[in-house]
Amino acid sequence: MFRHILLPTDGSPLSEAAIRKGIQFAKTINARVTGVCVLPELCHFGFDSDIGAEFKKEAAAAMQREVNKTLLAVEKAAEEAGVLCETVQEKSDQPYEAIIEAAKKRECDLIVMASHGRKGIGGLLLGSETQKVLAHSTIPVLVYR
Image (cartoon, rainbow, N blue to C red; front, side, top):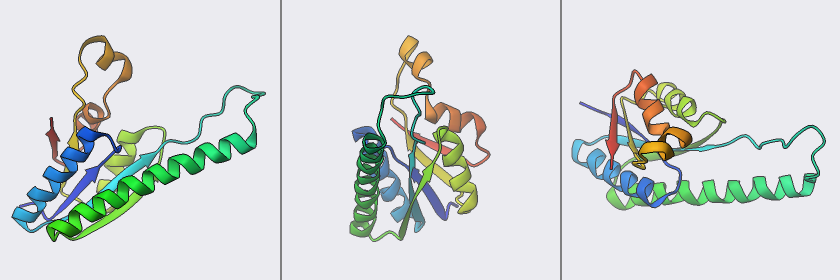
């Protein structure tokens, strides 16, 4: 059965629900979990951007605080459930690639993640990281909706 579950999160309420269910599942099968949050690389706005270095630094710090808060919530939920947990953060403009790579690197045998359920033009334009993970992962993926 599964021994090590990767739990990707973006901090959204649906993602938090998937984390809770993933931790519950891990507890029932005596597996450990790894929470992962993917930070985007900071965008550069054109060649001669008017956005100052201080703003970029503040934006990066704010994103880092959110990631830390999100991963701390994963650790707390796992601790409360009595499930072994580690957390990691990755940087990538392609979150699905970072999620798959994190699972491989940590020898996870299952990825449990949320689907935001976007349909139609919204799903097409925004894309779905979950859909991309499903399409490219060789590791089983359990999608929570």
